[in-house]
Length: 387
Image (cartoon, rainbow, N blue to C red; front, top):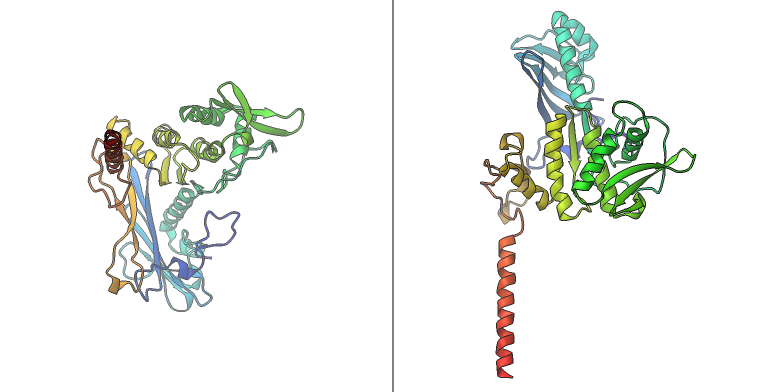
């Protein structure tokens, strides 16, 4: 398989559907799509810039297959090009002739050249193999948490192990908390303490406690607030929904990437704003990169404030607005493509290129409320005078 678009719902982050569902809708007749990214790694002597660039087409059975794959590191470039009948040519750097070609040189899962291709490249083979491994490790270091988190249980069993991830729906976040509280070692309570401190800063709880139920191998999560200890199931849903967000922030390995969809759901405005502080502080302390999709104005505004306070700089934060370009009625044959507009931020967090309708008109709302109040007061006075 060159690219897994759907597959196993349990183990895959996301179901992209079939090949046609991924095609770029803005270009008619284009039967291919491209995935590309680059990442920078410090090798101790400098920074390596590694690039993945792959064009996919559809085979006769409807699967996505590699048409043209580029892997680059520094000034070295390796390329696999699909020819007739599934054969591939392997090119290196700016060479005009392929080093080898044949059906046994098809890339494996997009990110790796085949063992035959690596062997055929001789002294360049180990470098290409290391590059493929670096790409795989970079992808494996991504933690993803979707917008719908699992509802809490009243108690949980624990198998005395630490999970490898928290799950797309946060289903294993509690297992991480149990392991943090109950496994001995230098990191005991590291995640639990981190989560408790942010719950307190959000003013949704004073602390979190893991409590065993009798002698059974079952445990409950206790939320302490204002001197009252309650089971996680008995407190507001916002606490259970933000728990996986806080857990993954401290559980993901240093240097990894965390992708979050709508981390603010079911949280009150103050707690939403504090999420911005979480992302900045944890990113700086643990060298973790956050990619966050949000509809929260409170989170956005607090991030601007953190820039004004100089707790974070504009060059370490990027903000984007997803929009579609308006089209004349006569041109509405195909939907306009969604694009990412990068917001231009100054050192005080002010946005220089506000999109239309980005947020509601807070000043306008306040102005209208005041106008309505004065009008009603005036009408009441006039009515009282006539009486």
